[in-house]
Length: 306
Image (spheres, rainbow, N blue to C red):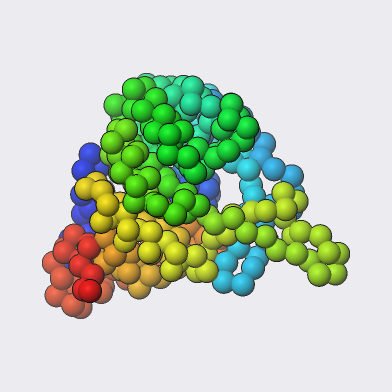
């Protein structure tokens, strides 16, 4: 049987399939379908120093080959995440490897969240820094589209915790390789990408946007070719593990990301249509490796032939 153990440097996983933040809640609901500890890791919804109620509804719309969402980073805040029965206490008992996606409106808020979570390092596998957030001190521009701001965030988080750090990159920056190099130099141990692409949809009968926020983030199969290209570029630009995501609905999709250079993948939108999607993808990868005489998952990482 093929070896799916996954080496992400400071993080070691039982297999290379995790969930994408914002698509799996905090794991409790899905644990009714299968043991979430079967996954490589559970990446929870974004956590900030404060509770966030998110955007107005409607905030999800189905589109061709994907979906739009403008949830607005709804979350319980770090205090409730640490103490609430449905959050970290449940995850601790589940036996799952847990990665917490963190965010803030200022650099100090990112650092505060990381520092608070560091007190529970024994329960956590790592932190994923979501830099696709508006920097309120800079007029609402996203940290994820300005290298200087992103570097400042990563440095502040690095100074606040010894937990392994993953920086989640936005696709809204053309020189993604340079962006990755900058955040790695600032202290990120890994890179994950991509986040959603900005998009919109209109109801032709009402002539109104289908999302109350007007714009939303496009995810699903429509963005897979973009994600694949960026994962390939980043894997060539930095010498740290890369976690690929964006439109992964099958084990074949996941294998493309591994071949392009990803050491692990995150499944997101597929979960909404099939809660078992990550489990099916794990089994499909294992079967493919066995049938093709490939001993371990690492053997195909970055094996693209040009």
